Length: 124
Image (cartoon, rainbow, N blue to C red; front, side):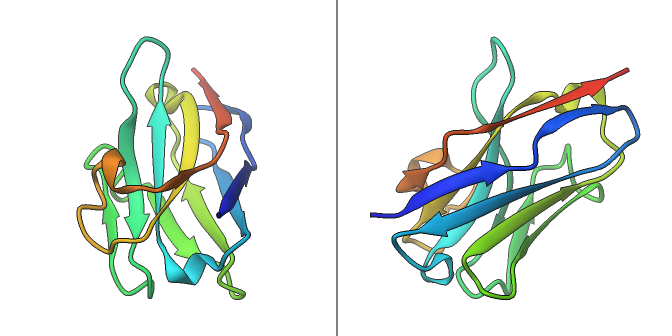
């Protein structure tokens, strides 16, 4: 059983930056593909970014491409989401997730474990 805990959320002005962290325990995140999803009020959960198990491949939603970067920490048990040039429409609860499979990473059903979420609010 893998436990995922997100941190680093908060309130930021439009154009600012935040870095979310996802710490994995009960397992090694390098054994899993890792993804970030978000859910805004009244909307469905949507894919944001993902990285393959070895970190060699990364995937992004079109809405965040060029602004967000997913990466793995040096000790492999932490995954980050660096968010730059934030926009009010990026406001959402952001969830970290881990998948035993290394494909279909844009689909939430692929993921086996989920964190509790971190609130990101971008003011205009």
